[in-house]
Image (tube, rainbow, N blue to C red; front, top):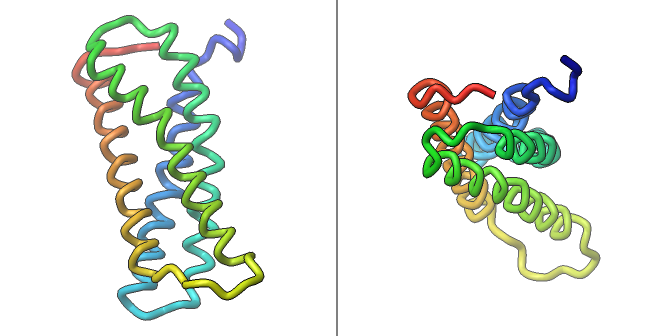
Length: 143
């Protein structure tokens, strides 16, 4: 057995989950508590979550092709959300980066809207993890 044969998705998937959910929590706490100084830390964690979502999705896609089709409907939904998450995360952090780096003073996007966007993606992250748990613990999917 080589390292290419190992199931890498369970290894990689925990990094974007932890970074994105923690970053969302920091951003929400900063907004509610009025601690603007925490925003930078929250966004750094969100950027890391977006970056780590790429190998998580790629390894998940690779293992989807090797997976037994136990629970095919759940597996396909997990795959769809897992492939969508890096795009959503990337769009949000790039959009935020654009608003920070742009030279002209246009309308500023309010903090509550950023919190709403990252919370919506966090809900998708949790749902994808829930589906992954069903696949492993309920349907017995082993890679």
